[in-house]
Length: 202
Ligand code: MD3
Ligand code: FE
Image (tube, rainbow, N blue to C red; front, side, top):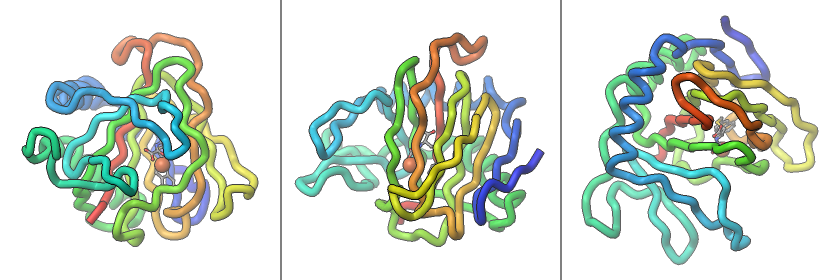
């Protein structure tokens, strides 16, 4: 079912529940080409979340990380976004009222028990008018959703395997994060939570 949690933020509960195996197979093919990596924050901490990606990916530069079409180490393009993700993102965006959606970047986050993502804004994309579509797989997590100021009060939204959230309009620049993932085992995904975000970076 569909739940509006804030202006521009729509949860589509269970939207991809039937596509778990297909999505995991697609993710595994991406990860074979872009192995999981842990970034270092500007403050010098190693992130607990492991990341992979396709479409436009990430490269480090003197200013930090930025979106890139290529792997600057191998010189090759990052792998293409799997067709199943392009199709589901378009369907989800339409169902949430944003019309046709053609993302160019896909970030895949892996949370092991204890992994978290501190409150942050997503501001590296060039076009904030496009929504972000996020897909949750595996272990459940509690999503923290705040306002345009870091100090704004946050609401906590439980997200489970198969949930999709579309974030656009006035929600696009809101602070958000993921509380530490609890120990557990998911029959399909194992001891992990996987989150896929589809974005328009350029
Ligand atoms: C709300 N990922 O990769 S997805 C991220 O579950 C990120 O891995 C979280 O935050 C995760 O940057 C949350 C949901 C999400 C993604 C982007 C947003 C919510 C958002 C951008 C603006 C507002
Ligand atoms: Fe984010």
